[in-house]
Length: 180
Image (cartoon, rainbow, N blue to C red; front, side, top):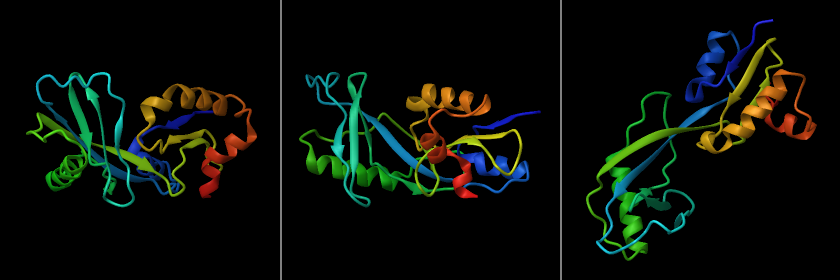
């Protein structure tokens, strides 16, 4: 039987609709970041990820990036699937919060970007065969952790497509059946 693996990221619900299936409630969320130079003599390369992950719209985080800092306002704005562009006001507010808590002056960012982090209502990934269609396997909703989870998710997808995930509890917690 033909198999489709729905690994379409923010577009996974739209791909399911093309196959005649209901979506799983996937919501893309925009996450923005900037790269900022640090004062001369400040060696940040060995610094860990740090920040203030506060409730609501008050957080930020930063990490070293080739002698500079990557700073994110930790935004999570619901958007439609599509090209993600940073919101200048969101970036400015995040940099303001950073500057209020860290003794490093904010300088003009060298560049900024945004990406999409997609979540389903329970914020867990969706992985497994859809009970409504033979051969339709979901691999979506990694919430911005796709690169980090790719090896494990690929192995689980392989298992799902070749007889099932051995850990029944894990299979159930990831299954698209939880949205049916």
